Length: 389
Image (cartoon, rainbow, N blue to C red; front, top):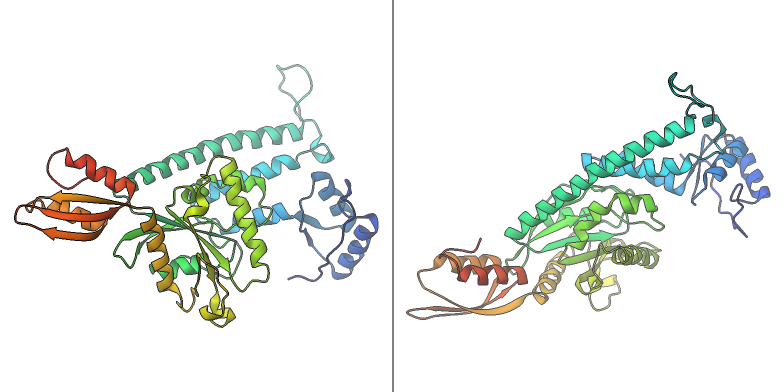
């Protein structure tokens, strides 16, 4: 329950308390009057600033990064999510271990056979955290390798991958459920989804795709989380189509869009995402029901308006996804023997047959295929008879 809030203009960031002396004192009086136990500062605090504010306000102080990490800690549902959150927490806690925390400077006794002073508590804590971080990174690397194996397995039966991205609480999980019939947790809260979820999706052309739900972005995402959730974001880098889901009814929708684009551009900078990601991105304005329906949402080319709650606009979104996937496909002409039903069935299952002409001794088909599928089919033509693997 929030009992006090304030917006404080800053002329400059004070090294000791972030806030000005008068501002800190005034907020301390207000918190004392309300018997505040926890104060949350929507900014990144240094360890010294956090300690000084706790002394001045006589309560626990949490900065923006700490709050996000606490929320993530509560929402992590799988082992992978828990590992990612713990790693981010430890990276954050390690930065808090500074000499300003005087209670950690007491020396512990050394072993009798070793000369010199013992290890201080801060050194011991730093060493333990460092050891745990190394183990967590090793486990998460195994998770990434497992994800790589899963992606390799999917390429053997390569369905296009469609990834949902967007600001937290934009309605991605609700849209995911509406399009796939899944029952992924969808709540009106921040970071309801932390672990990537994938389900099958049938498109109007009959083509099958895989829809992936991912963690929501937020402005000024802590650097600890960007690194720790790289495995989650890798699903976006592998996607054939990226659906950027926006909350059309949110007053800061434009700013939220800029924040998401900044995160994706950051993935380009660190080599996680290729520079051509905008070419395969489709913008989806969700929550149209809060604006009176799809017809009341202003649109520009390449943008689709939907309501994941009412289902309005979902058929148009499926068609737009289908068209975006088709734009990245290749058209090829093949001649299949009448008795080679397995190869013909494979083309129908993995591609979109545009034309077909049946002769007595051959079947001529023009088919639209994903580049990977076309390569598999062409390779199989020179192998033993049977459908491509």
